Image (tube, rainbow, N blue to C red; front, side, top):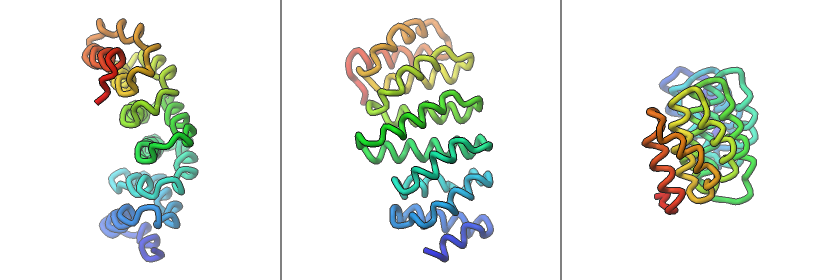
Length: 194
């Protein structure tokens, strides 16, 4: 483990192989969390350090939550991605803090961070029901893609997102979001979230 952690500072090829090994090790690689976070904060967006952090799981959550306030949009985006994967894998009811932290990132001014937030909430699905009010707000975004991806996330949440039906019905006339809105309405009304 110490050799892998030291290799995180190495040239790209070796660093990326070390990250792959840490991802495969999973939770036992928790000592590598600070080094992996440094990779994210350094803007190494092709390293897939977020996947290793997601694989480590709960022990990486505090560092990832801290990374959500990083000045780098890439770091924030990758932290959202990792947190979404951790929440998806955990299937627990004790980690509402993760969904709340991810949901807050819908307010990020960077398009890619907001987009990744929608995707993370969509992947999490029904257990992201606390995100519904913020996703409804996001349906009013000036950005058509954010409206579309928010509709996808609402559909993935399913019947627990019934309060979103008025805004989704309104989106049926939105050229950018109408297909996603139609699908979301069906999933919410029929409980068809598969």
